[in-house]
Length: 143
Image (cartoon, rainbow, N blue to C red; front, top):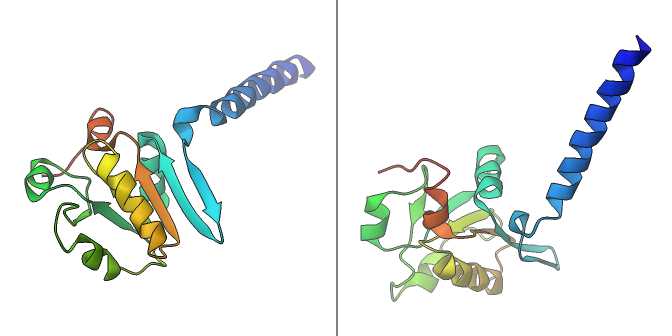
């Protein structure tokens, strides 16, 4: 019986060690800003998918153009075109206390939008690193 316990413990320790070492990889979380209760985080596809799958509340926000959105988007996403003249005003209509999961084509516009939302008082914003370009290689899209 003891022989079975030792290998099991070794396997658990090896798996745990691998999980711990994976947590320090830069792709898991590149930019984390937590100040005064504000969370502004860039996350990879796996983390973004896990967040939206497990979140009790939140808004998935696509900031691409109407044409880009129509070509495919994350299921359940709302869309506000970053290039609209009233983009900031549209953001202001959202509840700043509800977590926002924002993405665009490559992560650039959504990164800018995340910074804008932080300055507007949004408490929790997650930006998808690599945007839809990264997402479609690993996750399904809705049309």
